[in-house]
Image 1 (cartoon, rainbow, N blue to C red):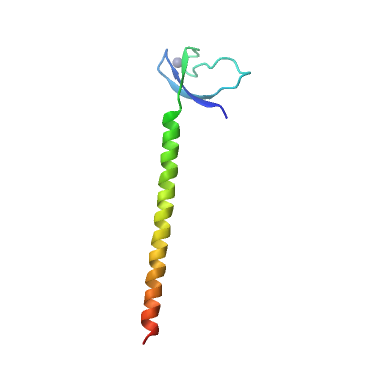
Image 2 (cartoon, helix red, strand yellow):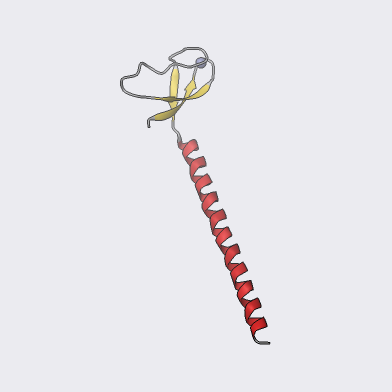
Length: 83
Ligand SMILES: [Zn+2]
């Protein structure tokens, strides 16, 4: 979906809007001005990627934690089997 961030040069409002070829020019929802500039969504993308990385990282940590638990249980079992 062609979703873009816009900045209104008239009232300094920032908003997000859909841009489709058949749509009329994007207007600022706050002052109805068409003096808006399209912002590169680099920041949003960056945040998204960082979020994804954080999720992956926490998932990895979760696996490590579970593995540690399994190892501990295994060691406990071995230790008590010997006796
Ligand atoms: Zn505006």
